[in-house]
Amino acid sequence: MSDQSCVYIKKEWDIVAARQMGRDIATQVGFKTVDQARIATAISELARNIYLYAGAGKICFEAIETVQKKGITIKATDEGPGISDLAQVMEDGYSTSGGLGAGLPGVKRLMDEFDIISKSGEGTTIESTKWLR
Amino acid sequence: MNTLKLDLENYRDLLDEYIRTKDERALYQAEQFSKQSMQQNISPEEIINVHLRSLQELYPELPDYILDSFDFLMETMMSYGLAYQEFQALREKQLELKSEIAVAANMQKTLLSTVKPEMEGVDIGALSVPARQMNGDYHHFVVDDEGSLGVAVADVIGKGVPAALCMSMIKYAMDSFPELRMDPKYILGSLNRVVERNVDSNMFITMMYCMYNTESSTLTYASAGHEPGFYYHKEKDEFEEISAPGLVLGVSADAMYEQYERKMDKGDMLVLLTDGVTECRKGDDFIEQEEILEVIREYKHLSSQEIVESVYKYFERLQDFQLRDDFTLIVLKRDV
Image (tube, rainbow over all chains, first blue to last red; front, side, top):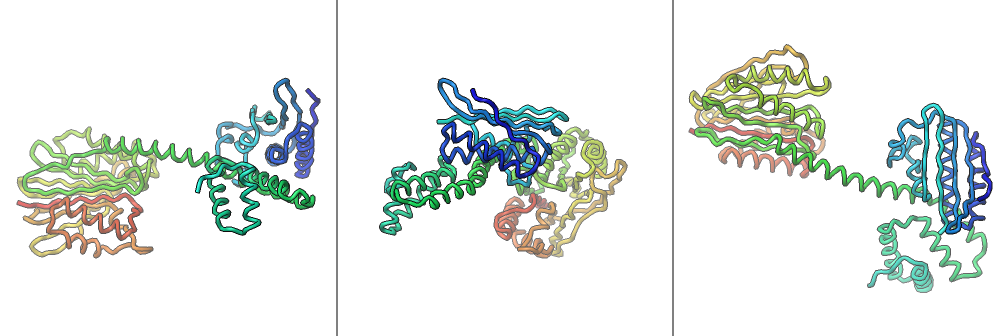
C-alpha cells in the first residue's frame, strides 16, 4: 500500500491538476492509454461535481497492490450540501450539469468499483477503484 | 463474407488491405466491425486504440506527433462512448417500461370492458381506440330492468396513464349506482360529485349520457361539457348536432344537469363521439364537422358496427395511421 496523494479542488483548473496526478499514478500502476483516459475522465467527473456543487473538496489517489491484483482508487471528499436522493443521482439520464456530463453512473461505468456515502448538510464521499487487467 | 471478430489482428490486416488497395470491400468490412463493436458495447476509445496499435505495427517509423494525436483524439471521444452506454441502459429501461405499460393497458381493458348489448329494435356499434397504449376515453353500456339502454361516453382531458387511471374510477362509480335511477341527469350529477371529491382539480372529465327506451322509442340525454353528438333524421336525410348544456365533471360539487328528450323514428341514428374524432387533423388543420358527417353519411346504409369501423379506418388513414388522441365512436340506430 502506498500513501495517498491529494489535490484540493477549489477552482476549475484544479480539475486539471487532479487529472494529471491521477494519470501519473495510473501510469505507474501500469495502466495503458485507454484506461488512463477512462480514469482521467472519471476524475474529471468527480472533481467537477465538487467544483460545481460543493464549492470545495479534495480528490485523493491511492495505488493499490495486493497479491493478486493492482489498481488505483480515487477518493473524492467534500463538505458540501450532500446528496439527498442517491438513487436519483445514480440513475441514468439524471444529470444536473446540463445533461452532457457523464454523471455518477458514467464514473461507475468507467471504473470497476464504486461506493458513495452522503449526508445531507455534511458532505459526500465517493470511492472508486479500477483494477489493472 | 464471413463475419470478423474485432481484434487487433483482423483490424490491422483490414486496415492494411484498405491502405494498399482502397478497396470498397475493406470499407464494407469496416462497417461490419462498427456494427459488431456496438453490439458488444465496445466504446469509441477502444477502437481508436486498436487503430493506433495497428498503425504502429504497420508503420513502426510513425512520428511521435502522429501517435500523440491519437491520445488527444481518444480523450475527445470519451464522452461519446459514455453517452452511448447511457443510451443503451436507457433503452433497456424504456423496453421494461413499455412492457409494464402493456400489462397495465391489458388490465385496463379488462377493467373497463363493457359488453355491447344485443337488443331488439336497436342496432349498436361501438369502437374505442387509444392514441397511446392506455385509453383515456371510456364508453359503457347498461340495460336496466325495464329494458332501457344506457350509453355513456366519456373523455378525460389528457391522455395516457393518468387519464386511464381516472377512467377506472368512473367505471366503478357507475357500477355502484342503483339501477332504479337511470335518468341521465341524475347519473351525471352523482358522477360529478364522485369526480369532484376524488380527482385532482386539474383533471376534468366530460361525459354524454344517453338512455334509449325501446318501448317508447324515446331518447333521453344529458351532457357534462362533452363533445356534441349527432342525430340523423332518416326522413329529412339530415344530421343535427345534439348537445346539452352542463359543466364538465369535477369542477363544482353542486353542478346540475339538464336532460332532453326526443322521439327516435325508424331508421334514425344517434352518433356519439369524443374529441379524438372531431379533432382529427389533416396536416396542421382540424377536419371540418362537415367532413365527419359526409363520411358517416357515406356508410350509413351499413350496420352500426360496420359504420364505426369504416369511419375509424377513414380517419386513421387520413392521419397517417397515427392517432393524436383517443378515438371513440358509438352509433345507435333504431331499426324497427
